[in-house]
Amino acid sequence: MVIQILGTGCPKCKALEANARQAIEVGGIDATIEKVTEIDRIMDMGVMMTPALAIDGKVVSAGKLLSKDQILAYVKEGK
Image (cartoon, rainbow, N blue to C red; front, side, top):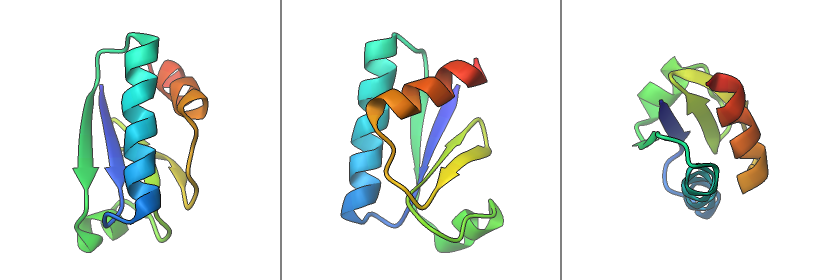
């Protein structure tokens, strides 16, 4: 599983990445976290507001900072 954090590196983007790392650790999920910072690539994925979270290339949230528990719920759905 690949979890993508889409954002340019703002504080909320960094917090989303930290929450995602906690979620996979707590949930015992085998996943890789990838940061997507290139604006063109973010827009190609259909995201207009960051931070955004994608799982295996599918955007599941955009424009809000998800908690560790919210991310874990999305990850478990994607399994």
